[in-house]
Image (tube, rainbow, N blue to C red):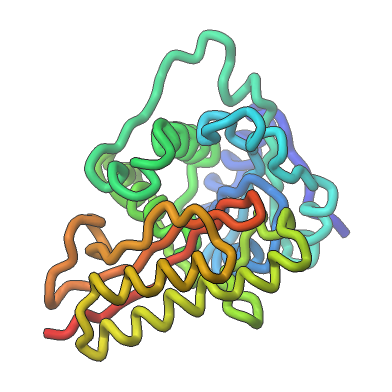
Length: 283
């Protein structure tokens, strides 16, 4: 049995009013569809913590940097609904584009600071699109908690900052990145890799985890990152847009005694892959 698909906002809000009238808590898992085990892990976490679970499915045009990338993004709504059925999802909310962004829509939400390096530097306007659609989806679904994966680490920090700054009454729940057997972080974009490229892709997490372990052992980060970037190029990646060690919260320069993150974005077989791993800096 598939998860029930709801499209009109009025119908979704009617259900939400009924649930809240009964004192039930609501968890939301925002997605762009093409669901995989990473998404399902978020749904399971929401199911454990909340009385009702909404999964949103909206391929947000405002966070893509090219019309071609937007057009290529996989759209598998029926298969997604079938995957969610066994998880007892209460609603798969699939709003129409015109209801999310009507022709007279004139508001953009922008978060500064944490959005500016890394993805922000390479994808101008991307995070404004993310912040705007996340704010809209939170207002549409009125959740008590929202569940985000740690694979998109910079996005997670954006959402945390947005909710804090706007005083939104919900909890952001981070969930661990889910990886394939060879370590590659699960992503809807992985299905666009050729068979050969998919085998090469394992070099990305291997380089990350290897560099993180050596940094934690006390080696200097700068030459290690240069070595890891060269290894990625040798494995067929190109270009490597960034491979950077940053503070885990602000994404500024890392500091001893604070959680750090090693983050990467690299192209392989015409597909842009991102990943990150926690790093404990020596005291």
